[in-house]
Image 1 (cartoon, rainbow, N blue to C red):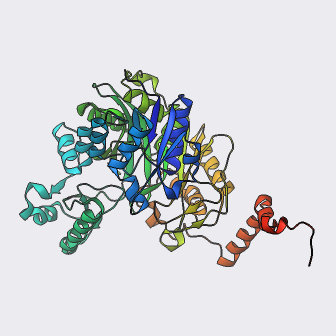
Image 2 (spheres, rainbow, N blue to C red):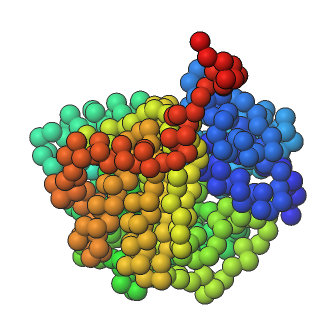
Length: 491
C-alpha cells in the first residue's frame, strides 16, 4: 500500500475547497496549485502550501501539465487530486505524473483514454452486450457518414467524439439541414477539443438523464453507489440533480445500476467514476458516456448513502481494498442539488460578472453548501459561472424539495445576478414536484418559469436586502482609515 502525507490539488473554486477539507480530515498536508486570480480564494487561503501557476490566461495555467507536475515535485506531494474539469480526464497528465513518481488520484491513463473517446467507448460497451443507441460513426466510413446518419431517421443528435459538457452537440429534426449541422458540430469540436471527429445517434425525445456512481479497486471489484437523476438541464448542462431518481421503478433502477457496474468491471476500473445513460419514456435506456472523475453532483450521492467519495478516491489510489459490499450501500432518504450560477435566466442564461459584495450561504437541517467564494471576491468571465452547490437532504423527496426551496430563498449573494430564484421556481413547478421532469422540461415550461416580478419590484427587493444587512451597511458608512487617522480635527 502506498503512503501519502502530502497531496496537491490541481483545481480551484468549490471543488478545490471540498477536496481540501476531506484531505485535512484525513490528517494529510494539502498543497494547492493556483493562478494569481485565485490567490485570495478560500481554498488557497486554507491550504498548507500554495504554488502559483503562470499562463497567458488563467485557464491556460490550470491546463499546464508541466507546471503542475513541477509543483507536485516542488512541494513533495506523493499524489495529485485533479477534481473535475481542467486536467481531470487527461490521460497525458496521468502519465506525466506517473513518470514523475506521483500518483494520479483517478483511473489509469488507458482507462481515461478509452472512455474519453466517445466512439471507442461506445464500441467497447456495445461489444460487451450493454445497450447503446442506434448510431452512425464517421470513422467507420467517412464518405458514407451523411447517408448513414440520414438512414437513422430524425430526430438526430450530432456529437463530437471528444466532447463533454454539451459543447458541439447539435439536434437535427430536419434532415435537409444535416450537412450544415455536421459542419457546425465539426468546427465546434475542433475549437473546444482539438478533435473534429463526429458521430450521430438517434435522439430520444425528452429522455431522462440517469447516471450511476461507481467505485472500483482496479482489480475487478466494483460497487455502484446507486443512481442520480440529472434531467433538469439547460444547453445540455445540468442545473438540478437528485437521488434517488423519482422516475425509475425498483426493477429499472436495478437494471441501470447493474449495467453501469458491469461496464466498470469490464474496463478494470480504479477509483470513482460515473456511467451516464439516457432513459426513454418506454423504459428503454442507452449508454451515453463514462466520466472518469468525480462529478459536480457527487454530493447528492454522499448525502443519501453516507459515503465521502473523496476519501474513497484517496483510499483506492493508495491501493487499499475496496472494503465495501454492494448489500451494505443503501439509499437513505432523498437529496437534491441546485447549482447556483452567476447568470441571468431571463436573458438566455447570460453570465454575470462583478465583485461579490455580500455572500451568506443558507444553513439548517439537512442543508450542505459547497462553495469556493467569499465576500470581496470577483466573478469573472475566465471560468465557468458556477458559484456554489446547495445540497439538501430530507427523509422524503417532498421534504428535500421544501428544504432546497427554503435554502435558495435564504441564500444572499449581492454583486452579480444569480439563478437562485429561477431554481426555486423550477422546484415549485408541477412537472418537477410530480417527478416528471426530463431533459426538455426547461424549454417546454419556459413561460411558466419566467419571473412574474417587474424590474422595479426586483430593484426594491434588492434595495431592502442591502439595507437590512448590518455588516454591509457598516462598511458603506464606515469612515475610511485615512480620514479616521485625522482624529477629531475639523476645518
